[in-house]
Length: 391
Image 1 (cartoon, helix red, strand yellow):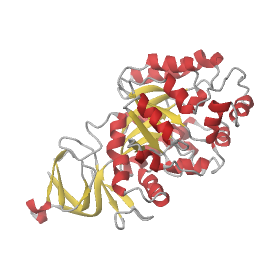
Image 2 (spheres, rainbow, N blue to C red; image 1 turned 120 degrees about the vertical axis):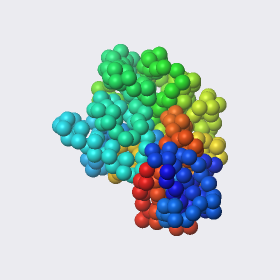
Image 3 (cartoon, rainbow, N blue to C red; image 1 turned 60 degrees about the horizontal axis):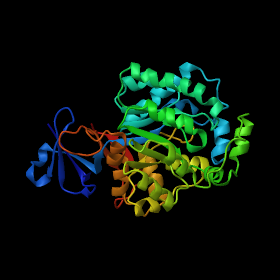
Image 4 (spheres, rainbow, N blue to C red; image 1 turned 60 degrees about the vertical axis):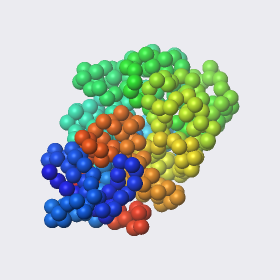
């Protein structure tokens, strides 16, 4: 039995409470959250700062961990994507070593679960051995060209089948983004998945995405032509890109929209009208890395949207650390309270991935991990704020 306290403990109700003691069994399962006055002070472990459940990284590309420092910042999305595809001659040993290193780093940074994108099988062995719980999204795309659909689907289905062979339950096939998935591939993805899971899709990361679907304008047509992918067949829908995604995805699954940098209130409302199981993953450091822009989080607060936090990959970030993402949000949109950010980083992410049975909050019987955030000032994160794993 362990008894743990700090200046503040993040409670299941979403508040930072004083004078509380977290009681766990020897395996780290939560027994109770009680008033400190009920306990002998000498029996309690005391920490400064905040005690909260382990973080949920709702969106990551662990398999790209070898890409740290290889792509320029601030280029906008399409030049960023063009740069990424150039890096092909990297040894498998280097890729696997980077994956294992970053899995361990995330664990040390208090992350207990990850929603991870996989285009390859490279991460599967590390995930199998990890202390972190993973939900794997096998990402598929055919570059909006029906002539590629069957071959691309079969290629990614082999990755999907590799997870089935390992008898992992926490995985789904998912579309990459509206601008890379045909209706035919959406249908194949929907048919492949079991019901009642979680899917994800990259959404409205750049203004070019909406220009493509509204008017067949912007830089996407030339982007596809540069890769010799036919694009004459594409016809604009006259609507913003999220409407195309909503038309073709399975509303019976929980859906995690990722990035949402250019989302406006009508986009959020359209998604909420489509399904009550919508979650929104923000990756602020990646948004700054690529587009020099953050979402307007007030839009999501006004809509009572269920927000989560992700890191994206080391292609578009400097580290895979949820605390650093929270620091960025609070520095640049400081009206968002620390209690709100902790909700996004813990229970909302757990709910999005379907891991709320064991993770996300200090409720009896759960084993959510226990972390300590130190060096805060007036319930604000600072540049010196750090996370330490307790359990």
